[in-house]
Every structure is written in structure tokens, then in C-alpha cells.
Length: 175
Length: 280
Image (cartoon, rainbow over all chains, first blue to last red; front, side, top):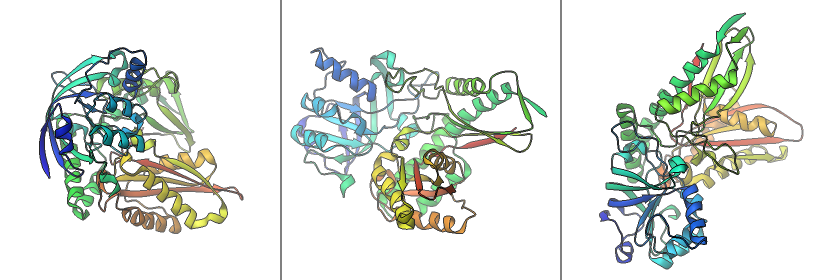
């Protein structure tokens, strides 16, 4: 089924998405990958605030190539999600509602997705030039010292993804 | 003795870094085109269509094919009648990588220390493999490697008694474990024989052979074709979302080994299998 969805995604909206749905996401999404996740986890350990509000938001596992002059961003496709698995259940329990990446998730992440009524999307890996066209603005909002691994806020329009794991735990990779 | 300045090598490597990250080689383009026409799954065809569009945009707008522009793996085959002048060859290679990744707007994905993990900021150092060969030429092969697929690569130290079923099982195990993580359709480089490190290096070198080429050794060529069919029977498909085309090709290199061993290395590459060579 083809769907157009806007961020933030409420639990009600997330529960309406099903594994296999082809979705076009519009709105604000946040970018964080390995090093940013580690730093966010340490931030939570200290009891400090994260760089962005997790509530009903979507995180995109991605580290872009540099933008050429006059461009919004460089190549911007998904990275392997399983490297974030260690940190993900905690973020889901704090309100994160959607994740965009590629590849399998751990049983702990799938349980947390079900527990919180969240959703895991895959974008097509290795299509970073194509996907960059759906990104309308990009701003580094934290951890600038991490270079490509900094936390970014993106505005996207009709960003193409597929629901891989839905709020009931149905998993497109396991079919 | 022919003199070649290391500056020439720096200049070539800079250009090669930019070229290889925006344009796939002809063998890969052909393989992807064939894949799209033979994919049975509708979603699979849709994903292969996106990869076709992605390649077009990458070349026309000079946006890297994939944001993971890789760690630069460089094979330097240096003729024994060549005298490299004008500086240190390792520094010259890294200067080429630094210039290519900086001037080409490529991602800097290298950290200086595997534990402390500080980004070096210029994608150096490269991983350089040198070999001395007859003649007075230098052949440079650059194969930037993304880590979504590199992380799924394996070395299996099999027993001689494991034989062909053991070899086939090792390759299939690595591919199935990789699944959607390695951005299928994949290209599979395999090294069989040698020692622990030799088989891993052969697997990497095998990825630089044109996809669709076959080994001169009959049993190896047979295995390349047979295991490709077995991989495409797994149903992993493009993007790991189901379909026929899980791999575009399997390249296998072999070497003599010890009476007690049967090493098998499987280096998995995504559909952005980048390799480019130049002879100076």
C-alpha cells in the first residue's frame, strides 16, 4: 500500500502503518548514527537533555557526504541500523516513534518497537544520490565535531521508505 | 630502470577517487541492467529501478553514488625496473586520497584509532597493498570499500575434509547472514587457499575483477556460476526485501595452501562495487 505521512508521527499514526507499506515521508526528521548515538546515551546517563525532543519524532541513520557549493547536502542514503541497536530501546522508551535505516534489528529493538507502538522504515541502501533529492534543508544541530556523524535536522519532502517492522512486530525481512 | 615521480601517482589517485565514487565501471553497469530485466519480484524491480535512477543522478549532478565513499583500498603493482622518485610512496598515495576526498566532496569516514575513534578529517590513511612485478610500469587499482558490506565479510578456516560442500556452505552462510545489511544485490569476492591473511586478501582482489568474468581454472569457474545460482535461490533479493537478484556476481581467486588447511574468505560488497585501474 502506498502512503503519504507527515512527521511527527503519533502513536496512532504509527499503529496504522503495516510492514510492506511504501511510504513517502514529509516534514522534519533528525539524523544520528554511531558516534551521535553513543554520545546521546552518555548524555542521558548524566541526566542531561538530548539535542532534540524524541517525542513522536523520526531518526534517520545516515552520515552524508559533503554538500557542494549551493547544495543542501551531498549523498544521503541509509546506514546499517543494527549498529544502533544497543542504544535504541532506551530512545524508543523515551518517545522516539520512527527510525529510518537499512538491515535487520535485534530482538530487543523489536520488543521495544512493539512496546511503544513505533515503526522501523528502510530506505534503499546505496541510493544516496537519489535520496538526497528529497531533502530540502539540512542543519547541524549538535556534535559538530563529529563531522559526518553530527546530529542534523532535515526537512524532507516525499522521502521514499518502506515499512519493514511495524508496531505489531511484523517484519518484512522475515517473510 | 625507468623513473616515475611519486607526484604522478598522487595525481592519478586524486582523479581516480573522484571518478570511481561517481561512475560505476562498465561491468557493474551491465550487471545491474541485466538484473533489472531478470528480476521476478515487482518490489525488487522497483528497487533496481531506483538504483538505475541513482546512478544517473550521481553522474549528472556529481553526487557520490553512495554517501559511504569508503575506506580507500589501493593495490600498487610496481614493476621491478621502476625507480620511484621525488618522495615517499606511502605519503604520495595518501596525498592522492586526501586531495580526492577533499576536492571531490567525498565523505571522510576514517578514524585514527579503532578504539579512540577520532575522525582523521581527510579519509587517510589508505589501506595499501604493494606487490613487485616484472617490467617497468606501475599499475594502480583503487577500490574504495563501504563498511555496510565490509562488516558482513568472513574468514572460515575449514578442514580439508570439508571439501566442496564446506566451501559452498561457507559462502552461503556469509551471504545469508549479510542479508539486507549489505545492500543487495551484492558482489561476492572469495579467496580459497593460502593462509589466514592470504585468503582474505584474495577475496578483496577478487572484487576488483570484472563482474561476469570467470576463473581460468575449470572447477573454480564452475563454482562461481553454481554458487551464484545458489545465492539467487535464497530469495533475499534487492534491498533484502525479497526477489531473485541477491548477487550480481561471484569472483573467486585461489592459491596453494597447507596440507592441513582449507581457508575460505568471503568479502561481501554491495551493488556499489567500485574499482578502477590505471597503468603508468
